[in-house]
Length: 362
Image: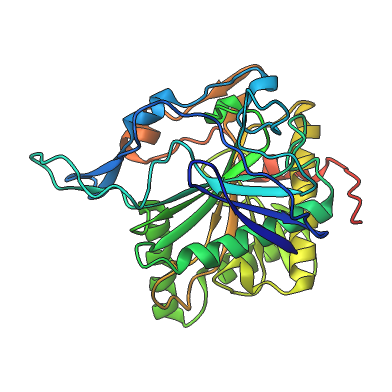
């Protein structure tokens, strides 16, 4: 993997990656942002016991622009500079122009609840210069590079003393809140462990203390014994819809051995992970015969501390679709955290398993 570190005209970092050498003459660019300065802050929710982020400047961010003027397009017109410079590279990473977290804000409003500056880093990972593409349609080798980039950025961001947890994710489709069509993901680096991941870790730790083994390893063992919900399996990677899925088509991808971070994967495991991810995303699109919306999170261990029981895994949660209807979170899901899944994991696993796709592993 080749990497080049540049600085944008507005001072933000730009990292370019490729499987081949990157030229030295690439000129970094950025869109002009005349909106309010980003000063995000957090307020403590006394009932849920969690921080809520407030970033009102994001109301001014670009929303579904014409593709010719997308801020993630390649800059080909000096009158309309964009985030992506002209040049021969494959993947770009840069700090978000409209961050929910940053390291520069030092103040928060004084209120009746606890407040604090929203410390952290928000980065954008652009998968390709082709705006018509998608993560699943990219060659397997490019997907492998993207996974290497995310692993490398997790390591680098984790060195910051302000950062406690690094969460890479991809929102795909307007149904998942996407405001730019160009295929990209994001990496949020928090000054705390997010509530969902904190709950995952708590359960993993309790199982570890009770049994001396890993909870995800136990889940994998149970899924292999049942077999009905396994979508794809290689020597080192397994992809399945868990028996307790909260969403139809909620799918997990994980290494069979317990590791805490993606950078700990061997070359063979990384190869197989990229192949499995490509096959699964292709299955989703082929099943619905259209681009399938989803949220994909990469759950890893916190970057500070020791978590031997943590087991990194991908969690893909599409919106619920029945014929022409999409179900959004509401009522009991948002209000109580009690999800209502109107389908059986075994049914959805069988549908995906029956979709035959051809993955070229060049």
